[in-house]
Amino acid sequence: MLALLAFSGALLPLLLYQSVENTALTDPSEGAPLIQAIYIGIYTITLFLILGRWEQFIYVSTRDKLLLLLVAVALISVLWSAAPELTLRRSLALVGTTFFGVYLAMRYTLPDLLRLLAWALGIAALLSLVFNLALPSYGTHVDILRGDAWRGIYLHKNILGRIMACSAVVFLLLAMRSRRGRWLTGSSFGLSVGLVLLSRSVTALIVLLTVLALLPMYRALRWRHTRIVPFFIVASILLGGTALWLWGSADSLLNAVGRDVTLTGRTGLWAVVLERIWERPWLGYGYNGFWLGSEGESANIMFGLRTNPYTIPMQLPHAHNGFLDLGLDLGLLGVAILALCLVANFARGVALLRSSRNPEGLWPLVYLTFFVLYNLTESTILIRNNIFWVLFVTIVVSLGAWRSSVRVSRGSSEGASLAKPARHLAKLGRRG
Image (cartoon, rainbow, N blue to C red; front, side, top):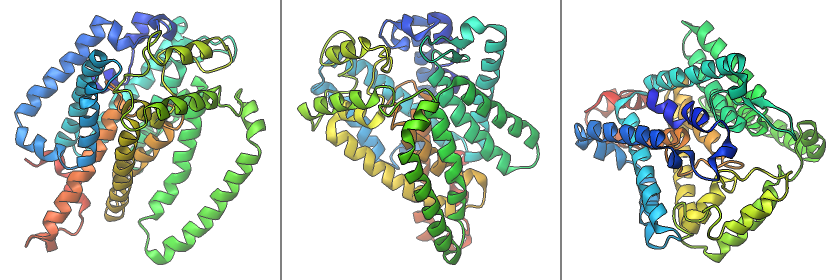
């Protein structure tokens, strides 16, 4: 739970830096020895825990070859990186983060993992509320152009928004799972949604509303085909009509929330980033080898955006799109590997959902949707020391292990007695 809080970026970066501007265009985890020590401690403990169950770790970690390949490409990209020393150091941290995600999949069942995540995110939500009420100078994100907003125990309001959007989804699934303690999960869901609104993060709100709108459709996947087809026809018509209306009213809607059709300068940034990707299209600039502050290829981009006060802030620079950042780091090779990985795991998520009647069966598919949507305007793909990459790894290797267990059971004499394949995934953490 403490490790998940650390990976969410809670508390310490805020206490050390007070604001994202004070990070001087560097990664907070790079510049603070205390934070570095905490991550190294997490990796060290994880390694010792893995060594005690190394056979199980190897089995689980190799269930999704595409994820393994993607991390391996990031590691060996030091060979062509524009900043090889930085790539080596950060890719090793990425491996440590990935190992932690695999360990979670190896040791915790889906219900246990959701409860663990709920404790971590619930503490983050409660502390954020306390910080803003008791220590508003810390908990308030000051923005002269768009007005102040809550940031809770995080460096930026958008970070609070994305963490609380994820928290809301987790508590909603737990509230659906059991009537016992529903008042607690329900109130935690309400607090998480309230913090999303108070953060004034438009991306977090849109992603959360989209996931909540898709949730009934995902639950409908469990129905018989005679009911699924007409439901999805009607749902597609309604969603298509809503999408067309939103497209036609984009200007007025975005103006109402203080944004414009450029998505706060993102579209201009994306055009420039695409040009840089096509300069090194196949393998990219190496893992974390492009955004180098005042050095390297990114210097001109960052300078141009900082001179315009109405564009997105360039502290902790990235492309504000996870897929474009992946293209910069690992080129079209990395993007292709991730795309195949996502397609395969969406299919596994649907298969798991149809074989399970429990709300936690929704979690892999819901989180993968959340992950993809968020990376359209933010970057959480292949990010070291990051809770969203940890959860992605956990879900992908869990789905891969579940698929393998189903194949084994179908080919064995005991296969006929395994009526619910999802039971394998629920027991994955307790199997040696």
